[in-house]
Length: 471
Image 1 (cartoon, rainbow, N blue to C red):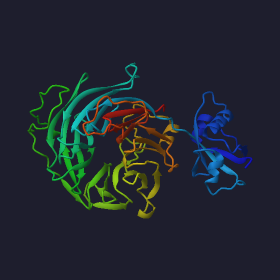
Image 2: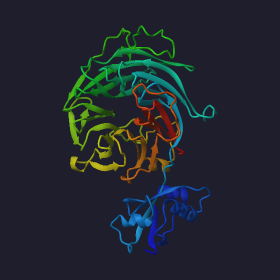
Image 3: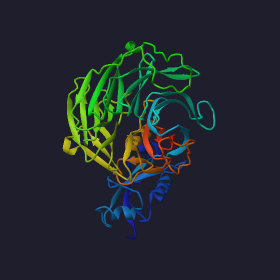
Image 4: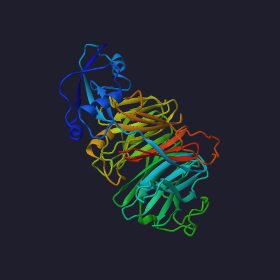
């Protein structure tokens, strides 16, 4: 194979930024790879500052090595004239900093551009302030541990935050101690604290997942666990305004959840039954609840009626779920892409508009351990939206973390090799404490991609890690 004959094409949104690409067929060296083709595009378009690009061969083959290898692994022949689609490359995530905990970090929720709550295996909730070093002109970036509260006597498995329009915020945690704890977040300009409010329901077995959303004046909280039942709680902010005997506790003091609340445990408004085994994952949208289970199924529920409106069967246990939220909307409405993490080391992406047989659109293969968490990039907390070009790029990507210690960033058009694979055991971010649970390697348990330019990962070396992208 002396030369490969190819024509470059691109979306109009890209050409608006880099100019038109040559229309004629070009003879390319078969050894050209992503870097050398990027150099060629920079030269052809006479770009003042170098940009990195990705390349898709004939619409479905992502260029991961060189042209010759990519063509040889496809159904193309040497005589074929190929079409190479040019797309902007996602910048490589860079490790920025880590925050130490006393035990494994098992749950993350970023609820504002600079506030994060985490749950860990010692049952403690931590409230963090994150400073990227830009807004306050401080270098380097830092985490500040604002408050800690021992909400559970056993490991926390999931966490979420209800933020009412009136400003009140509540953190929901679920754990292996069969409890669902609701705590209030009190914030001032200088400090923040967490105080216990009440429990949600009374449960006979471990609770493994929670998801929540604000609907008007009320908050909906859904929880599921080993019982195989999803309990739905309808919470009014005015009904949670009572105080507790923990209100005078000092800031940052770690407190055990043995104190009683003046508000009795809240009762579930709905009980959703259908899963035959434990409910491990859940995600709530404006219209639907999606739940993943040990029974290998993903169920779709009408959150208003409690009716199960669909069942998607997967090949293995569903350990996590996320939906891709539309960039133009402040909340995820009628999502059609659902990502699922699995115990068989795969990530799957589903088109929820399609029929059941055609619903699976991609299976991402690359992890060597159980996939713990997945996250699409979300924009709701970003102070500014990236350009239309960057938004188009971000619509194709997904984050996953696994117990193999890898944080993978995927392009959905390249299912067999991730764009980037970060080994958290060698990324240079070091935790400062030894976990109580015995594991001291940085294996990944949870992740969040709450803003376009930063990702967060929780690990078994007791660290919360932050990675940044230059978008």
